[in-house]
Amino acid sequence: MAVFRIERWAPLDAAEAWRRVTDWPAHGARVPLTRVAVVPEGPTRRGSRINARTGAGRFGFDDPMEVVRWEPPGPGRTVGLCRLEKRGRVVAGWAEIAVHAVTDRRTRVTWTEELRVRGLPRACDGLLARAGRLVFGRALAGLLEPR
Image (cartoon, rainbow, N blue to C red; front, side, top):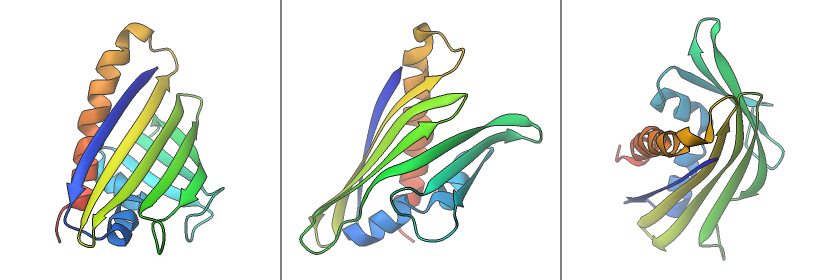
């Protein structure tokens, strides 16, 4: 299993940072060759299912996930937490996104993920973790960049 953690700071309030990092289709726009869909469509909640399809044409794989924890930041809650369980045939594991309100206009976002890729030997875990930090680090930075 490959485990990685990414941390980014953003000049945003916690609600806006949360909205951006949980805009699942926007993730697909930031990760090469990936499309993301939410089932059912509409606001994310505990039990929502998200599918990331990576590949080109018929060559690719699905990464289905389920939201098992959904606690947006809000009044009386300075940390928002979202946990996704990966339930695919190719990719398994989990991802956890935490949005920490540091001040009214400054937020720290952490993304922690554990990945297991079917058929990939454990000797590749370090490489997989580095690739995850690179790909998801760029995606997270793009989602949080000033607009």
